[in-house]
Length: 361
Image (tube, rainbow, N blue to C red; front, side):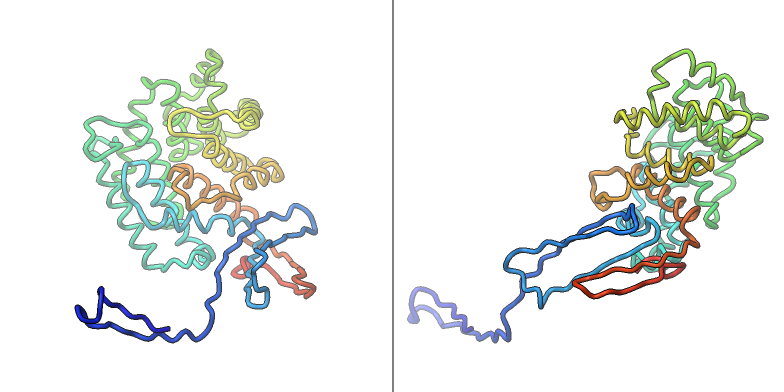
């Protein structure tokens, strides 16, 4: 092709001319993605293409996994690269980096460089610490002038989770936050108490009852039906009971599990910045902590699976809780699972073994 640029006539301007060689007719690129969880021994996945698609020049890419890893790559990419913003965003976007660092298979699946993850962790922790004051409480924003109980409790849980992945955290900041929650606990509302109790139970475990009174929460719960319908409250409270003493609180735990299930089925939306999807993810983690029915847990994991987690539609809190549920599920049920997968594509049969570092192909 020859391109010429000329003003009105050749008397008034020079002709600018350039020739471009087109070696072949360019191909139209069309990306089609289909995701499916195999719920039976055999399944059929159909890829549809436009009528003008040249099948001989088309490329098909199949990905298989024997755990939900394939469903969380976008969460990692979305959260692992921007630890910034308010306290909740900082906490929610820093934790997944440490989990990615802990599980090498996650790092491979996301194409994230280990040095980038390490930088994100350091930057995230530095900004988290900037929200902590000497008296223990955390700001929601750096320019706030008062404590935020919810963020302080959430900070304790996230810092403990980061610590559990092998990343060192500032013990003075962690202990100060715990001391602040212990001191304020008695005067808090039910909603604040459930969040605080969850954080303290994560920190003290089976010694929590020597620090605070748990039974008063059960009494308050029975006074007001509003709290029975607030899923996040019930999840936080029940999760704490599981961490403290699952045998002692078994009847309350299982009653609450039934109520939470019904609320999820009925599509009840939580209050504050918690929504039903975030509640579902935290409920799945609660059930795994309690060693509840694996089939039910898998049902909730599947509810979280097939979503566009790279989208800004979901909050960092929701993404983080979903990511945590996937990672816990993989660690608990899929880390050493060996699966043999046989499949047929356009009449050609192939067989794969999914296990360990080759769990995702």
